[in-house]
Amino acid sequence: MGEHLGRVLVVDDDEVIRQLIAVNLTLEGFDVVTASDGQDCLDRVHEVNPDVITLDVMMPRLDGWETASKLREDPATRHIKVMLITARAQEDDRKRGMGIGVDAYLTKPFDPAELIEVVRKLASDRSLSSSGD
Image (cartoon, rainbow, N blue to C red; front, side, top):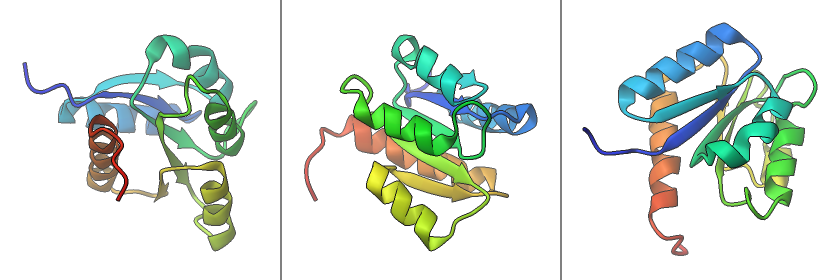
């Protein structure tokens, strides 16, 4: 058994992208669980107990912004690292994300290697006791 890198909840309504992310992270050694949209993510986050959540922004029912906000409002999920995956990385999107407390951004189309690198960094940030910079 390799080192346990952490658990990632991959949230995307596009099954192809969801599987792409899940396969890449699984090969890298992460424990991966998937959800089909923001509501599905919130329904399952407590049982899944992930270290990192990758959130697509554009999703039905509950989009990435709303989902991230709700995760941050709940004391039980506030500590989870959140990465937004968006086709629009405009400056105001980033500002909005900063306001919510999103940890990272990835712009579509993304390079799987970049995704892995960011998730790895977030997961290891979490495992180091949160010492201030």
